[in-house]
Image (cartoon, rainbow over all chains, first blue to last red; front, side, top):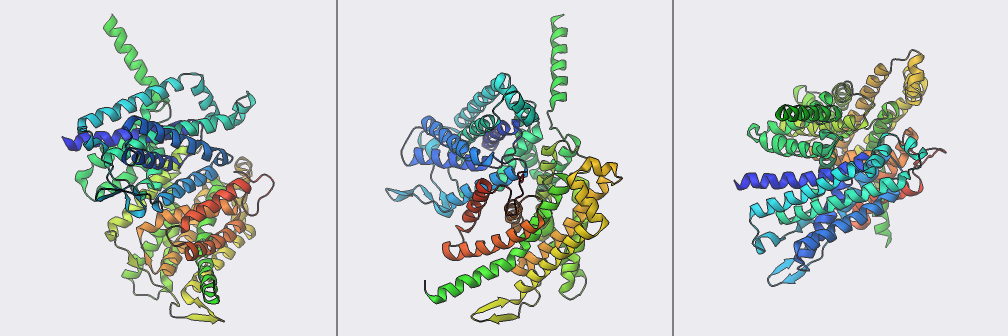
Amino acid sequence: MDFYLGLVQIIGVHTLLGLSAYCVLLTGQVSLAQAGFFAVGAYVAGMLTVLAQWPLIPALAVAAVVSGAVACAVGFPALRVKGLMLVVATVAFGEAVRLFFFNFTYQIQAGVLHLGPHGAEGFRQIRYFPEHGWSTLDVVLFIWVVVALVMAGLWWLDHSRVGAVLRAVGEDELAAQSVGINITAVKVSAMTVGGFIAGIGGGIFAHYTTHIEHAQFGVVLATFAIAYPILGGLSNVFGTLLAAVFIQGFLIEGLRFMGDWRNLLFGGLIVLAMNVRPRGLLDAGTTRALKRLFAAGKERSGA
Amino acid sequence: MDLLDLIDAVQSVADGVLFGATYSLLGIGFTLIFGVMHKINLSYAAASIGAAYASLLVMSVVQAPAVLAFVAAAAAGGVIGGLVYLVGFRFIPLANPLATLMSTVGLLLLIDEIIVHATAGVPLNYPALFSDVIVQVGPFGLRGDLMFVFALGCVCMVVLLLLLYRTRLGLATRAVSQQPTASLLCGISTTRVNVLTFVITGIVGGIAGAMTGAAIGMLSPLLSLPLTVKGLIVTVIGGLGSIPGAIIAGLIVGGLENAFQFFRGVSERDLYIMLLLFAFLVFRPGGIFARSAGRD
């Protein structure tokens, strides 16, 4: 049972990571920096609860704000360029963050233990959940409440004027600019919101794994972050959730019985999925079809 | 710093510049594919390492001199390049840049995993040429294997430049990269040019993979991600679409990498390369040889 609860935790945190990339992708920018923001959130939240003995929620809030601020600061120089250049700039930023934590040591003595990040060894003993008597189920519920809140927020954003502006910039920058949208402001805001969400995700990640180290936040995690929304489709937030369940639940855990071959199938299935459904699993057409299906069901039950 | 340290520093920078030829070739590959298709092929460096592995397979079957490894790697690179195009680009609508980006990520993971699966993740030794030769220039010694790698890289670059600027195929490639619709109207088959670009960059990548193997002395699937990042950085520092830029940037990155490693240690080395990239993005987004409108 604990295995499945653990899996549900992972899916939740990865959904947050995917949603952070979703915001940025809506404006048509491919950012591989999300793993970097995730790392900043993880280290900040971990240091606040372990070293400063803060409660979890304020620590997560501060982690989110710090990640958002970093994203905003990175957004200005990085968003001067686009396309391949932006991909490279954000990869470089993500790697720079990882290498920073690789070289980052700040420890305090607590009894016999040394607490805090320790360079390549990573940051051990983030034991907030066990120390405060949270059961695995509590953690799962907490994570999914946060995921639901973030998804609801993004859903609302998507259906407001802001969502229309974000998508306008994503579809055609020139057209958006010519109707008076400040595209730099829109892109940097999207990046900031993305950093904020990644910070929350990273903070939660640090607490349920209890041990974080630089290697967890590499290019691979960054590609996973953009893989969820791209594979799921950008038409709405549920695509990202679906893709997180598909990748973490099916491709990674569900295929475990295949042993070695699982990893081979993983890359192959992503390639296949993009060939078959280039606009994502849950694209606009599918969403419309589902809506019609539900509407038809309602009519029938009403009649 | 006394004289001995200075000599060591210059020596390590020289080694880095020689090894930088590998980065140059990878940078050229990324630049060419981007130039022709306006797409990023993230699986390129992994395919290059894959080609080097394939050449090891050939070498294990056939008893042949070490030179053949490079030929085999080039051939395998060409084949893999064609396959990458077929699987990752051919059937995906080109108007959707995210789909091809993701499919190449999938291919990167797939190629890496095929390598891990075939070798059980154990690094394999790669044959080096002239590894016993050391040319003494004053207090400095230039390693024969690195010099061979550098010379091979230079030959590749010259051949590639001749191909692009002296043949009909090169003319077609450049036409497609400038104006795809206009070149289609002139009777150039864009699909054919795209396939050939992938095969040619694949060959270059295969040679780069073999050069990496020969210079380091071994091959490991762990090489593909760092090489992807370095190749992309070289592409940006050199300026997108600029082949001379990629060549110079590769050598600069190779040299600086060793300089930073010498002065600051291996764990901080890449951090400074990333900062260098950021400096370029902020102050010279068009790369070293920026033209007036050199962004994207």
